[in-house]
Every structure is written in structure tokens, then in C-alpha cells.
Length: 85
Image (cartoon, rainbow, N blue to C red; front, side):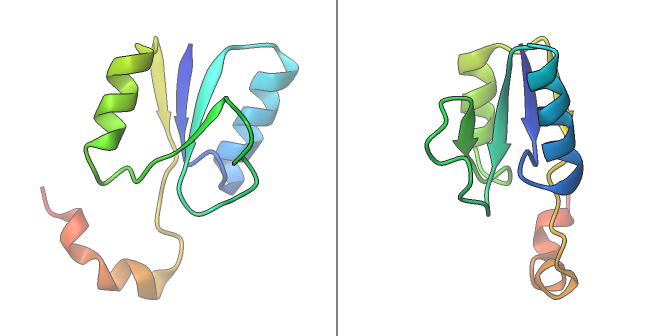
């Protein structure tokens, strides 16, 4: 089973579409989109919080494909603190 972060974005949604076609088990993680609200394969999670680690631990994926990003430049500038390690 795979976990795909950013599943509602351009790259993540394209990957999810391919996984569906190939019947590969996955769980998609999104934050800003509502298109997946009624699907049991998707979870609304803020990847900057501990909820992501809880989802990973509970699903025990064989791989994580990370495509989550802040695509709005102004929003990214406001949240620079998230970029510090």
C-alpha cells in the first residue's frame, strides 16, 4: 500500500488516477480540496502537523510518494517558518 501526499494537486491527482487504473492500493492525503471528502481512500491531513505521522503509523505503507506543497507564493511567504528544520 502506498501513501500519496498532495493527492489533490496536479501531480498527485495524476498519480492517483494511474494507481486506480492499475488497481494499486493507496491512501491519498490532501488538505485544500473537497473533491475526496466522501472517499475512504483519502484523508484530509495537514502534513505540517503530527497527524501525518499517525496516518503513516496506522496504515504502515510500503512507500510514501510526497507531492504536497504550498502552490500559492504569497501563502508560502507567510508560512516560511514551516521551511525551517
